[in-house]
Length: 209
Image 1 (cartoon, rainbow, N blue to C red):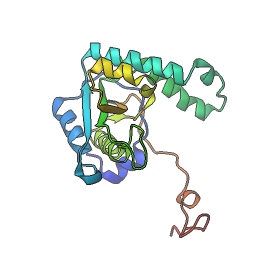
Image 2: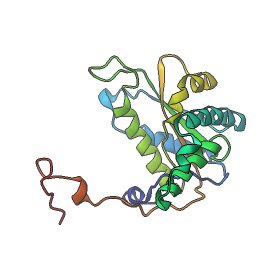
Image 3: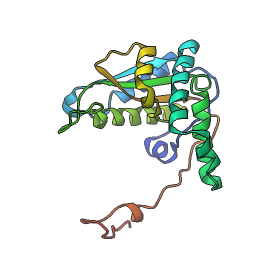
Image 4: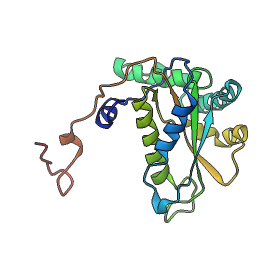
């Protein structure tokens, strides 16, 4: 298996997939890894809906596509001229068009409603849910699987909840498409530490050697 550091350094977002199904025991291990994430009060509010049935994936994909078209109309892609950025955006458009058909496995990550401290709003458990999603993606990388986290569906969250029978007191946070990647993992392009981290106060250089 891929070791943890290599996984973190190569685990780019994968949006194109081969159709090979993900075995049951691997799916169980991915969910198990997700539940090992730290979480406030050990409340473990996360819930995972594993969508593999072709008809159900198609229905989820239809909702996602509608949300994607709302978020990112074709005019956005037409306006991108930088080749590197265009490649990235094209990948996002590809996922928007194929969410319900190409990725063999969709994991919808949910949580019991828990407003953030000082807020009456919904979707307050992100500090617990998102570490679980990162664990899920790192575990997938260890098994040679690729994926990404997307929250675009939340433009049509009520429709998705209806499709999947999600109760009113449960919020959805992300859809994670997973499968054997049809594109390469890293290396990743990231800014150097010296550009994004400071020592003791904003703007003060941080020693990196």
